[in-house]
Image 1: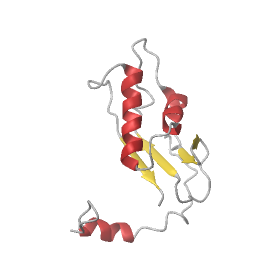
Image 2: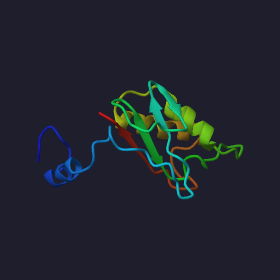
Image 3: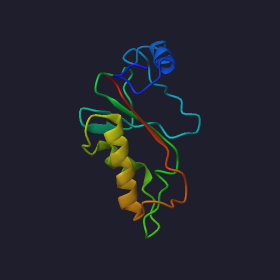
Image 4: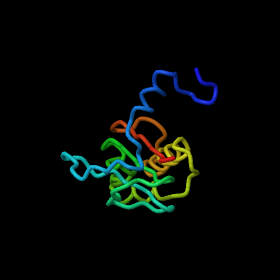
Length: 126
């Protein structure tokens, strides 16, 4: 295992085989799913650009996050998720994911026992 990486060599080898993310076009067809927010320059936008730039952040998530309900029964929604994703939270994917989960916890007033799963993946383009 590479001491500078938390991933085993097999995973690193597989990642090296992926196309350069700066050259990959973001899919425009969403197959019934919500488009994934992409943040650039500290803000978040609904329409991702064609090419990803270093520092861009991409969020992939399940419906449990925008459908998380407040104690009054109001869903967080896409706008609430966009707002959480745009909040400054550090530059690492871990910090951004942690901030998003904390935001959902604040919104719902819970730290466990959600009605649906809260699954997300944050990708930060190097």
